[in-house]
Image 1 (tube, one colour):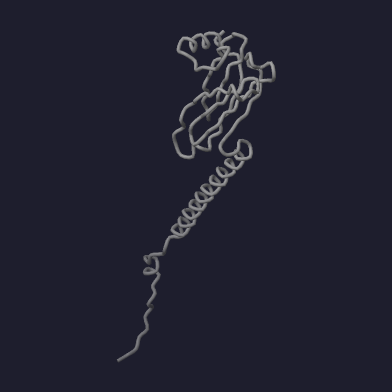
Image 2 (tube, rainbow, N blue to C red; image 1 turned 90 degrees about the vertical axis):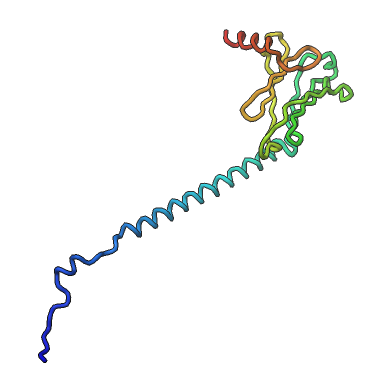
Length: 174
């Protein structure tokens, strides 16, 4: 028997062999990069949210409290200005009005109940503005992006009626 040699690897065979595509490796890198960016986004969002709660703790305390002192036209203001204190007590908005600083004449305004996750940490703000043009400052209570108006009735604050609201809207439109 004679031994003959023959070429095992022919050029024709090599061209038909399957070569793994390099795109598969780069796809894994892209997916891993996107997951890393997503994880970083979640982490940064959590840190920013925590930081906002800490800043609100410094500014408003726990429970969330806001204080305002001003002359609002009360007869009791001969001794001093009226003190207004807004609080978020376990999701219930509560406003204390202490006319002239006399705590024996404290009035309470009950605000809305806040519904949702972590609403007990929502700050309540206040400002005074003459909305109905009667030369008495009205109380505007801010909760998140909404405002509730309590009109100054001379001896106390009260919620706006539908007619008063239309009158205020007409006056602001001028």
